[in-house]
Image (cartoon, rainbow, N blue to C red; front, side, top):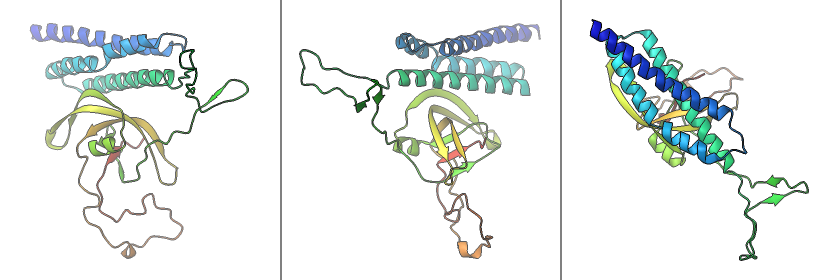
Length: 246
């Protein structure tokens, strides 16, 4: 019993050090100025990404073997939320820093055209319109889920940027699935009334087709004036996104 207490104390100390590392990283990002060197952000991101979460999961699994409780679940959720938020913020800073690059002509290449769409009288750069990849399909809202999911096929189709991760997912009958990739995405309802932007864990399959069989929509008594969230709800289709529905 005494050995377990000492081991638990040691593991809690190591976990606290990892949490402090993420907190320092978040503080650094919050105080980062556009005048600072973006290389420092990239270096700190490289030091944290992947390694911190892997170490935390290893330590947290050992703690839960010694002391399994709801508090431990909250510890895991809190760390993962802080970790993914910090990683996303860092990548967003790097992307914003590198978004606009104005290449002026040099003496050697006097005929080179600057890569700028348009500059107004005040010297402000107007960037060309970006056509972001879009997907129109079926998403499942699950208020009982603790994470968002997207299929690997859809992430590849949309050419989404992915980040390596190591997140264990426990499902029905205590089945375990290891998730190794995560991405950022935005989903919007057809009528624009619902919008969500966040992290999505990438897995091969979310669930079976929904509904399982296509049925005749004319046999459903739908009141007039009702705007359906999915006009094709009667068609059996794959679920390619699952959102926790916040």
